[in-house]
Length: 306
Length: 306
Image (cartoon, rainbow over all chains, first blue to last red):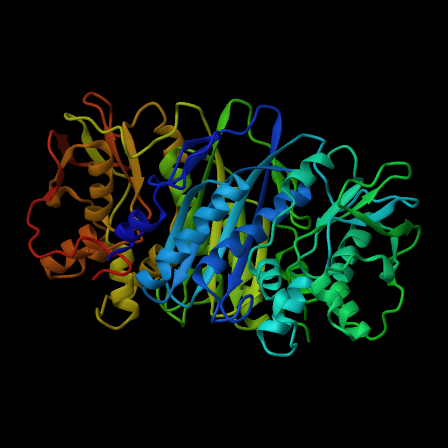
């Protein structure tokens, strides 16, 4: 099957949306940005064996790739308009592409993110998703607005993705009843798109947690020119994480593990913490991130760390 | 060096542009679409060993990746707003990244395409460029507007990229005086951005030549629901191509070779052929592409051809 038949067979019918003026099949897709809004754009690549295990299910790979990219829209307070997919794969294999397209379809539906274009090439399995969203001028949530006196919040429990990876790799014998939850938290993360929109005009700064809380709070602190203190005991943990008896391991997963795709944001004093979110720290003059009870923690996952 | 230092060191200072509201360094970049215009978006991936030889110079890889993606904007008649880069590479190697960034810088400047975001990951060398452009609603050049009676035109000589590849691979001993031209045509193609804008309201359909003239004219014919006849002898050839004595080889390069990134477009009867462009065929009722003097030609490069 050639590239064009492949695209037609597996990726057709995912490209319609209210902002899509022209979808898959021309040199470019055409999107209609809402009048007066800015275009928010971001790209995320997942490499087989680096960002997901080689044994991962194709549907999960697709879903996670889209979720990871969509999470960047959530962190800006942007509404999704559409995405493109650059898919490099070793061969046009129906056993891979069928379920991959299913996972893609689920993500398109769950995140209102039509697939408007793409490029399919032959090579080592790599999935790059580029998302487009829209946000009213002046309403975007950046990393740079945190002020001394603000509270630091997160949108949900942290550490599950790192715990899941340990579980998949046999490094942690988690109780079997948490297997489904851990799988979902790693492979089917839910970008906080509605929360991102709700935080417009409320949060002073925001970032999504992809590198790990300490690292991502560090990006936020640096961009805002402030110090952030985290009360480690306040970080919400799932029941699955609490099944890990070693406290240091739990904290390492929750504070230094990445890929949770929750939002980390700052609220001015007096602003109510949104439902489901938790205040875990505070902002003050200075620099850096300081977390209680953390010694010898890696500062979050970075590629090419020396 | 970690991912963040790497990005800062090599890719800084490429992200400013008139439409860039927020550049590299946050969860998303923010672009300001011109009022009343549509957003044109496209993505292109180049895989090492598939789309360029493993021995290619890093600066050339970068330049060609951007040019290939920008060419899709040209084919829509869109003006560039900005691009993102998803770069997967085996290691953070200064000997690669220094010249790669130089090539990127040249492309940013030549095509007015600021680098507003990206993702750097570890893995087999793969370069994915996502371009964003703008085009007034109703003015976009699609593949679908060709009408019987239109003329088919191309924006410049074809076949040089295929000839260059044969030259690089030692399959063709081209005269040494053409070495620089062939290198430029393969690695430093010039997307026809100004021509694309000039063709708004003039051309009835357009596509860029990336898969090869026969294949790309085929896409255009199919999208427009027409037949296209090509007069092979009218296809413009460079002096380098004319140095190939075998006529069949010349024609194969010009008609079935890809990666020239010239525009192929249709003009209604009476419209003047723009300077530098050449009429090579005509549109009639029916379907398919029919070129004189071509027998047993491959239909253009496709991945995963069976």
